[in-house]
Length: 124
Image (cartoon, rainbow, N blue to C red; front, side):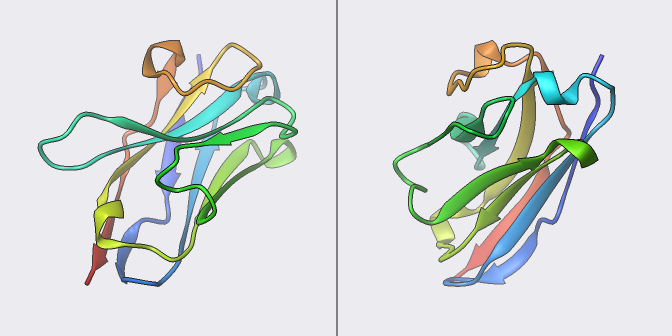
């Protein structure tokens, strides 16, 4: 069992930056690939970024590529999402997720564990 707790959300102006963190419990964190998803009001939850178990492979949604960076620090059981050049359309609840697969995935159904989410609001 893995428990995930996100933090770092908040209110920021367009063009600003935020760094989200996701702290995981459990001794097997380093064997899980991780992902970030987001859900805006009235919309489905969508993929944002994913990173493999070692941190050596990453993949991004086209809408955030070049602005967001996913990373992980296995010694601290933590995965991060650095978000730069934020836009109002990035406003959403951001969720961290873990998959028992070691490889990256952009599909919600591949993820076994989810956090409760953290709100990110970008004002124009």
